[in-house]
Length: 276
Image (cartoon, helix red, strand yellow):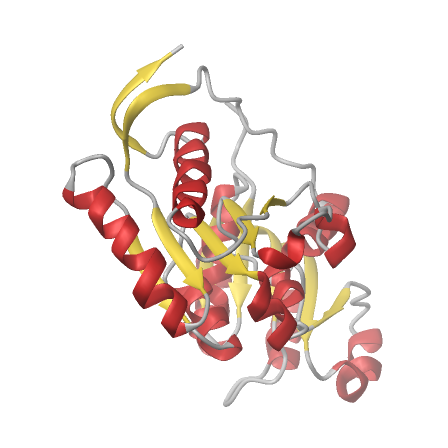
């Protein structure tokens, strides 16, 4: 077995580091987290890292001092600075010969591509088989209006649970800020995003796409998709399942639940697994 690639994530934003830790661990890396400059320096004394993802604007020992310590100790192969203050620190970074700088907010795919351009990508072993039956156990985040969620989707999915056909955990957000927060902290397996929320918050889909702790899949649904493809709404059809579910009748949540069930089976999110 090859030695695991070890990455240190340094940032005082706890939610951000937690999201990165989840995402990079799923990508196959060994990840340590430091939420202060002093904590980062302590870890660097203890471990040798292949890569450090480093924020700069931190209280106390800031990222520049950490970068200086990294260079002095020579315990790290490479550094990627992730900052919202690039211009402020650009000259100091040049003096430290740090070339890899990314500006917040960063997209998960963009970050992974950058990491893989510096260190070899981790080749994940494919699943040996696909799940063909069982009880779905997925965690779902509905981003929708409160009226639609409370009166249509939540009752339907709870009834599916009550009948023993699934064990869905339901999360809900009705605005952009809560949606982004729940997507990071709630760690949903599937996001169900209504197109009326995209119309209301124009950047919502892009913000979700940037989240590094991305769910396994995203379902975008709504009447705006009638007669249209996902691409017509600016959606990447490789990343989302697009459903035109029509008017708010019972067939609507049924279509969504069928899509969620298929995703759960695809990713093995079930009790009582049987494989093909």
